[in-house]
Structure formats: C-alpha cells, structure tokens
Length: 295
Image 1 (cartoon, rainbow, N blue to C red):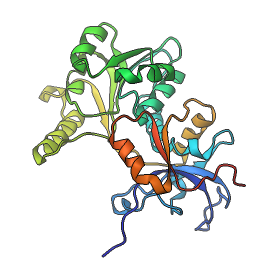
Image 2 (cartoon, rainbow, N blue to C red; image 1 turned 60 degrees about the vertical axis):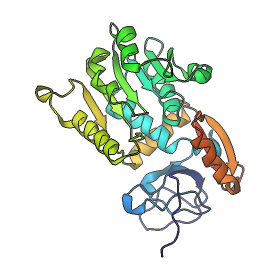
Image 3 (cartoon, rainbow, N blue to C red; image 1 turned 90 degrees about the vertical axis):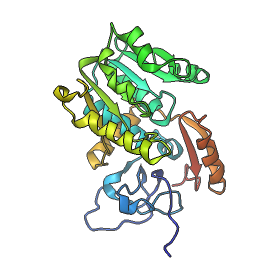
C-alpha cells in the first residue's frame, strides 16, 4: 500500500536545498513561488506539506515588494491569466474582453491583467453574483452581469451583439452554449478561451458529452458544422520564461493578490470546507509555516 497523496499545486516558500549541478539561478534561502508537479504520474506529489520537491522550471523568485503569503496566490491563477490573455489571445490596448467567472480565483487575476493591458479605452465585462459586484468592479470590470438572473448567450447577444468582444475568457467552462452561440457576440477574428476547471457532470454520459463538445469546438471545421470562431482549451505547461514573465507582472502590480481567507495548516479541512461552499472570492490560503520576515 502506497503512501497517501499530497494535494495542491500553488505554493510559496524558501529554498532549503538544491539538487542538480545545473541549478545555478537559485540559492538556498531564496524566496520563491511556483507550481508543484503537474504530470499525471506525479499528481499525488502536491505542496500542502512542510517540504516539497519541485522542478526549477516551475518556480521563480518572489519580487521584493511581495509577501510570501500574497505570492502563494499567483502561481496557477496568475500564470493561467498571463498565458491565455497575453500569449494566446495577444490582448492589446482598446480590446473588448468578456470574462465568465469574474470573482473566481482565475477571474480576479484576469480582470486585473486585462485592465492593465486594454487601458481606459478598452472594455471589460465580467460575470459574478450580486454580492460580488463591488469587488469585481474595483478589480477593473467596466460592466457586470448577474449570471444568476440571465441566460448568458441570450443576454450577450442582446447587449453586445452590436459591439462584439475581441476575447472571451471562460473560467467556468460549464455551458457549451456560451461558445456555440459566440458568433453573435465575438468578432470573426476573436478568440474563445476555456480553462480546465470544467464542471463535467456527475454521470458517464454527461462527462462523455462535455468531452465531445470540447473536442468538437477545437477540431470540427466550419464546413462540417463547426462554430466559426477560434477556440482554445488546453493544459498549460510551466516554463522558466513563462514564470519569469508572470513574476514581472506581479512585481509591476499588474495584478494583486485577492485573498478570501487564511487558515493554519492544522485547519486545512476548514479551508476545504470554505472552498466547497462556492462563496469564495479569490484565493483560500493555508499557512503551513509563517515564513514572512524570515531571513
């Protein structure tokens, strides 16, 4: 019987040991943040522990103006927002962006980064529940849609059909109709991005159906009935250059940490209860050790 798995991928901490002669960019004592093992065979080797073994390509030094606690909020969420909005969508000044799931962990990063890029002439529209309106607006959203009161494709068609988006960033991924109807509110050259946090469903049929929908969105050409809009749904691989680029944005405060709540390591199960409540805005942080201020 194997050892129990360790969950979680986002982390920050202090390097206590280095392995490998080619690791020259880091030193013991460096404050770093990053992403734990991501391959399927390493899925149980998470970072919710006192000591974690991680790859050098998956970490980057924490900027001097950022605390370790705040730094732990960025690795996956900031990395995802950077890769999709900057690398994939090539977002630019003046663009119009729709972010589905504006109060979620990735959504709060995406809104801030999009605001920095599109500037005052751009448009950022995001969804959230009414209780999160002020938070999402303060992050940089120009217009907010209450997803609990509207059928999104219908609402977007009615209100944004005449001023379509350049990028749609779906951080929820639960409604294929949002993409299949996107020609009504996404420019012909626009990009529809879906990240991996998809609510597939609770039965084999629902899971199979959702997978087929995603595959269809990516590979079925228009002449065979495909949606005439580009679609991206992929797993993003951490690299040193990507991590450095993301850290630079953190240092420049292109986006800031949004912490919902903080728990001690001994109260980790309470942290999971909080996450499962679906009332979270931003990140839930678990402090294994309080290392801020440690030399």
